[in-house]
Length: 359
Image (cartoon, rainbow, N blue to C red; front, side):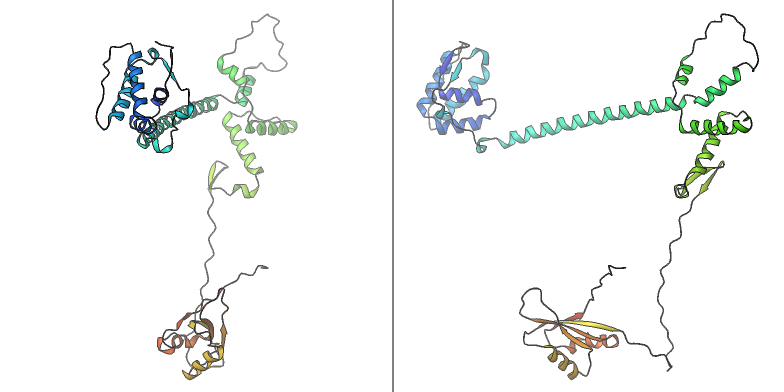
């Protein structure tokens, strides 16, 4: 019966959605969109085309439709899909849509957890491979450092070469075969220190013959010449290797902040000390209260103020606020709760400090 085409909307929907939806969702959708006759007909058709000798159980009771749908789902899962015919739909409107309400959230969470696990495994594998790549790069760098420099090769060649004005024998001497180390030396790229050494050697050989030096002296000479050519600001590091010794560079000492001190001489003298000024903030006064009322209240309390200023409100309020300028010596008096009427809000006024942009 494989390859046969049977028109049945109910079986077509179940056969196509059985791999994507859970059993409970399929039962609810089919029970809502298909009648009892359509479900029983589809069940009978499915049992008749199956090659296995399966007994079609006739369900009874209130949940007859749901039990039949469950039997169909069970049979489709047990039978080989290749041995079943293809169920198609003539009327596509009979295929119910699958909305988000029919999606099993638990199964979706399991799939997300599985994806997360696979992603973590992929991340761990990537980190391992990255470490291996770094280790191989470090090994190559160490191998390159172990190769002798070009200056050493030149000194070795000069030491083995015959003296000048010595005739060479006209003999067909076989050409020596270079080893792996010498081949690597011939392909070595000169470093900055080698170039500096060669440049210094060329200047010295013009006036006098340069004495032979070993590789350690060559590197030391290059270090000293490079350090002398550097600008002063580039030498300000933690440690510099100059003239065979370390030079410790210490940080500059920070400037100490100067603190003000006050005199304690209490007898009368010609120097009069100015009384500093400060401000008091008062609020929650009625709209009818003016600056003159504030000054009159201060005089009634036996005190004086330098000025009273009504503060501008950024938004409409039901009260007025004022800024009272006084001498700092009278601050404790003005901050006394008995000095102001009951319910009036007061505190020391915080002056705003503006930075001079032109400085």
